[in-house]
Image 1 (cartoon, rainbow, N blue to C red):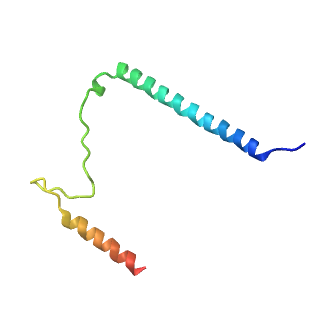
Image 2: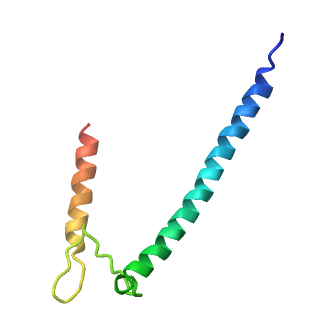
Length: 85
């Protein structure tokens, strides 16, 4: 009995990719269902409020200008340490 390894590997490829594809589609629908349930249970928490992300690696002064000197100093120190090795 001869086993064609190319055919067997192709079968496993198709089976694996189909499993991943079905799992991802199922996960999308579960997340959408979860969103609907949470919106019904907690309607106040899901209003359209803008989310503002503040960068953590820059210093912001009172006049809302970024302190680029600290960033330049950090980059220069990193390059210097890299060149030492």
